[in-house]
Amino acid sequence: MENKERLSIQSELNEKRLRALAEADRRQAETEAAIPALGNINRLIRSVGPRLLALGIQGGDDYEARSKELYLEHEALVDEKMALLKANGYPEDYDLPVFECKECNDTGFVGPMPCSCVKRERAKRAYYNSGLGKALEKQTFESLDMRYYSGTTAKGFSVKDIMTNHVEYCKDYAENFCRGADNLLMIGGSGLGKTHIASAIGHVVINKGFEVVYESAQRIIDAFETERFGKGSEEGTSRFTDCDLLIMDDLGTEFNTSFTLSALFGLLNHRIINGLSTIITTNLSFAEIEEKYKERICSRLRGEYNALVFCGRDIRRVKKENR
Image 1 (cartoon, rainbow, N blue to C red):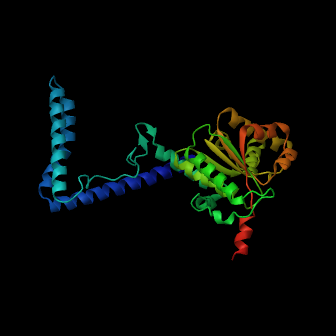
Image 2: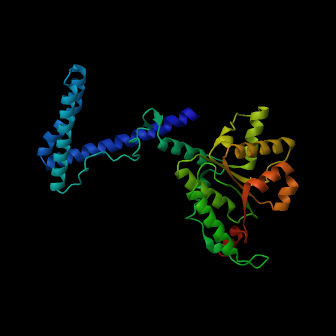
Image 3: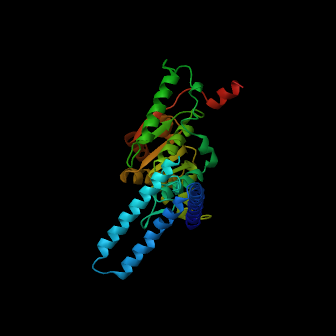
């Protein structure tokens, strides 16, 4: 699957590159038709490469001097071309290819190494192929509607103020994300926006070039069970243990067994030890977490995670009432 995905990404890059080159050829033909002198200049520019190669094959004591002359000739031709384009109302770079990725020119490689654009695309595909699938695409900070947070908490604090502070904190967290960023525990009842905000963080972090995996707690545990007991099709767990940011959704909905607790502790502990960031969302209260999980898991959550307590009314219900 990984090889198939790599080939798919490379194929898409090749298509982008060919489109950019074809458009550059079209623009060059357009300018040569409008400015006859450009045709000869372009031919001379194209001849420099083969002439330089011929010099290298010939060698000789005067190679450096002669190759320098060719470089200077090339620069002068390019300057002449740019001046002609500008004088005739065209941008100086009008007939140059416009590649989507400026680092690799849509080749997928910088030297022998895969370009960061390839890594970002692989991360995006893994993210959107998670258990929540396409639903994640629309869950961004921009699509979050703060109008649905209203009223006060039992202690009389403004729900909107609390949630606005949480959202601003999460925006800052996402924008400044780096390897080893804080772990977050998002606590609160169903329908308060925990999944939406966690996903919004994922969008920003992925676009910064980090590998993000978003999956439900149950599916993560299922993957560990498959690996441990060899049940069903194989699904590796390294994507959960080694990604830059793991977003574990709905902790507490997984079926609890001694293996579940052991796998969960091992995963959380591994990521803490290796400085890898995790965001956990849960509908459980602090008291319910204490009751459901063993002390060694609770101690990790208390000591290594920044807790954000979500409040308000179930947004889905509020939207239904307002229809």
